[in-house]
Length: 204
Image 1: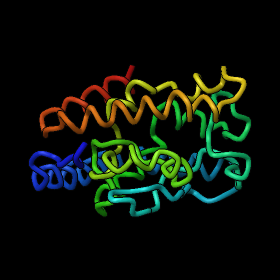
Image 2: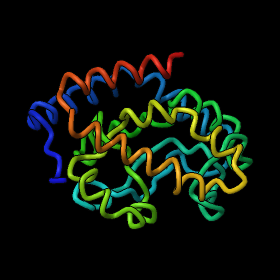
Image 3: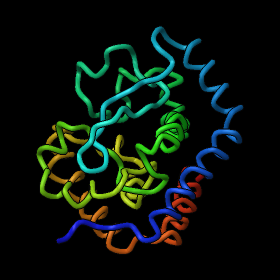
């Protein structure tokens, strides 16, 4: 399959910039409240940063509010429901998806788009490099159809005797298939639809 090329790429980038800028302004009270809650709840930095693979296999740093104890990644990169590494405030931030708000800065910088395949850690990308040649022909996004389907991914992994194996053998391949299908159909209008579905899903 040839690399996917987003329709109206300039319009998409313009929409990304304007919406993320407006989003940061409107969400500023939530950003402040979340920042205070994270600092009061547990020891450690305010933000969590992790290297993810971006467009054309260029790595970048993704930002989130920290939801886990310091050095949690040393015990693995997957998070299941009831993971003891998640802090009290972190659990609420994850459920509400407010921990993702700092990624608006990633969108402003051009590392990410509002809608696009969710960025994965390099370790897992290398295991599916052929599939990612298509998926990473565009900027990764804050949300996509796979994110909506796997909104409760942590709960799915919690019920598995081997979460990483389930993720690599079932969940990630399905995410890649959904991402490839999205890229074949992507337009600005479909992106707006994905954003609307994401907001409704989170609100519910």
